[in-house]
Length: 237
Image (tube, rainbow, N blue to C red; front, top):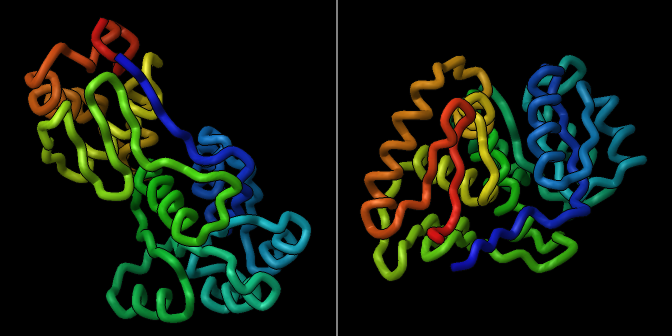
């Protein structure tokens, strides 16, 4: 049985702008892990300078910055790069804020707190829609007879559809993006749950059990526990 994953196309350049340096570093780490080249900035002035020298393929912009806001920054960046895909990242969650961001040209909008895995998935979608990926990407991950479609949010084991919650989907996507690799509970927490979740490792155990009930009951077990280390997904031998 096969294990096929398609990571985010290598060579993508992302500009991450947020005045919370730990958050910007965390997002940058997640994107670099996926093979992206990342530049961070913590103000409007830094972002404008970085955009000129770095020429990113996509930008992640915080709405509230110390010397301005992301909406004005978007106008500035688009004046030099009219088709630059932009995802807004902000603590503002009111409907009018989301509408304003999207109306002014933002391609997507994620509110804090957020999961890194969801953010990566949303950025992938924005890039696919923009057509700025350096190579064609396939949105289907496959491990054995288990398939996951990142665009349609559909999961099948063989011909059997599997209904998953958003968190279950994100957890499964992370596992399937790393077949035959042991992932620690802490690593999974950092990638799948919100960046300031501060949760306990037991939540990972609970959601792994949810996935097993929905997936491993349909055939040979795919999700394996590596005692004292974490979890791994691999095709049945």
